[in-house]
Amino acid sequence: MPISDRDRSRLAALIAIVKPARSLAAKLETLTGEQRDYCERWKASNERWFERCKAKHDDEIEIQARPYAQMLEGSGPPSMRRDVETALFDETPRILLTDTEADAARKWSIYNDQ
Image 1 (spheres, rainbow, N blue to C red):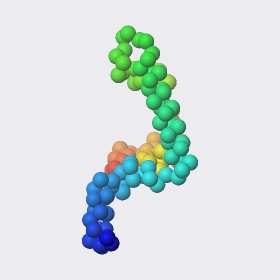
Image 2: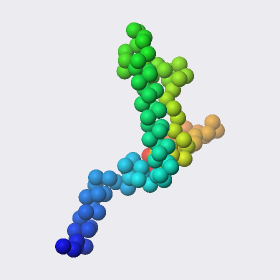
Image 3: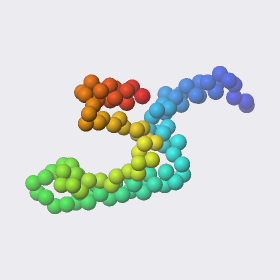
Image 4: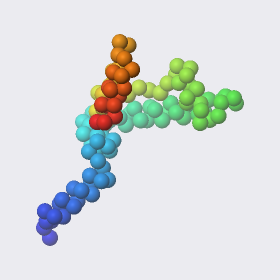
């Protein structure tokens, strides 16, 4: 049975609701195969770091707070490659030391409105 134009437009509308174009799920689909492979390796590396943090024996720090404590000590999670980070989360605004508070607020507002 052929699919009508009406059905196609309904399906497109449902997909747009479930997976908006600017969503992380939609952006993941735009990655190259190599970037997807890298993303999977990064995710596994990040999970191993998180598990090491939780396994670290420190009776004074709650298990859920140990990753944060590790970051404060300078042992943060693995960083994501810049091209993949930008593809997924867009370019973050660069706020310069010479920018006024109004300049910084404007840059951040533009970034949030995208």
